[in-house]
View 1: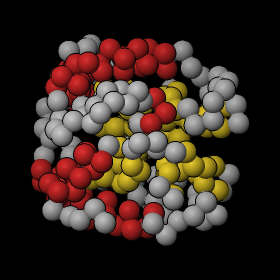
View 2 (view 1 turned 45 degrees about the vertical axis):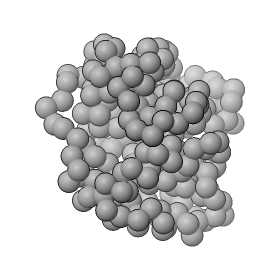
View 3 (view 1 turned 90 degrees about the vertical axis):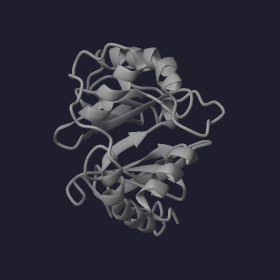
Length: 221
């Protein structure tokens, strides 16, 4: 079972709650980044006004609060720390319409906003580049996590801050039990990172999941 302590490179992520979905294209598109950039920037501006005591009305809503990933549960936000050196942000999607709120590397955050043509003033543009080698290195770990997720149920024990996929839904651990949220038309999975070592657990498009595992040379199932 993964956690920020047991698998230190897992990032908390979820697309569905803040996503206005559309038909999924067959490949990544700079046009999608440009289309979605302003919406992602607007969300990040909104997140700046939130605090740990801010009330929320919709269980399953997600946000970034003081650089931590936040989940709305029973009218208040539950905070989970991002991995050291990572940041919480709303990102423009590059496969379809919408945004993703997630903990991610500063490299990927800066890259997406740069390609979107939107000012992302907190971080400088990265020197690092996406790497097929990272996908190949991280693929087996992502596959192992997905195999573990297939054995979990909502009654499985967990540590607060754990993230997982349970019964096809995105799950976060709170007070020793998993709270789950539907991914809608998306799929919950651990996917291999392409900027650095590790995996990301999130709801994502089937196109992106299939592409990453294909490039990693690892079967999804």
